Picture 1 (cartoon, helix red, strand yellow):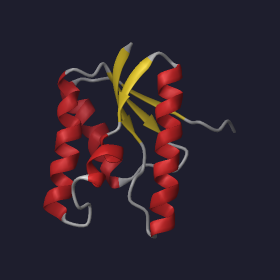
Picture 2 (cartoon, one colour; picture 1 turned 60 degrees about the vertical axis):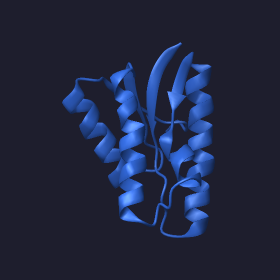
Picture 3 (tube, helix red, strand yellow; picture 1 turned 45 degrees about the horizontal axis):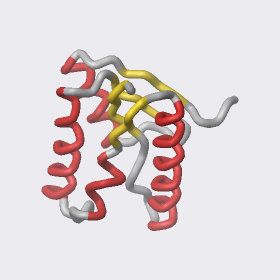
Picture 4 (cartoon, helix red, strand yellow; picture 1 turned 120 degrees about the horizontal axis):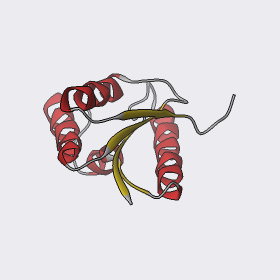
Length: 109
């Protein structure tokens, strides 16, 4: 299995939007797994442990997820719901670290 970092939106403008983003991220994880990848989606893990509303804890969670870049073979960006600020940080980090970035959609046009 190919080790990948998964990027999708997390924080929404409302709790309902955040919940929808979490459901979407889970669908993305399943799509990635079906492609014989082992995805890490830190935005599904760390908010259950850290307080995303506290900037220092949010940064710590983002950094913990991006540390996986040392072993990840690619960063996969699911863009059906747009590119968030957090996703942009992950994309930029992948570029700086020389990790390929692939863009995907679950829905076809």
